[in-house]
Image (cartoon, rainbow, N blue to C red):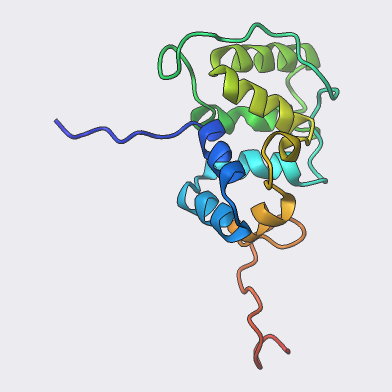
Length: 162
């Protein structure tokens, strides 16, 4: 039987980023754990053009207090549903349904990931994870100021016009 590899929770990854002493180390941790789901979450948390369809502040949900690794959904799998909660992305689902979906998602996640998601919604991840900034995220994923993949990062020389 093949050995299962442990996939860390996003909250664990961001805790490591927060504890890293240098910007380069923070970037290295994000790159090492880069997935489409993590990029999606961080883009939604830091890109000022992305607006969540919920008000800022506390969310009335019941935290899932079962031990880590048991009976939880994980943000790595749930991230593909986040588009429902972005203004203008899902114009078919009624607001009350979106709210119910969001509560259910939060209640299914480990408490640390649920708190992370609420902080992302409020654009306050940087307050929960020291040193996690828009600049660190953009550099880690080679995104430009618009949070878009910068295919040809400028390194100087003739081709870049520098």
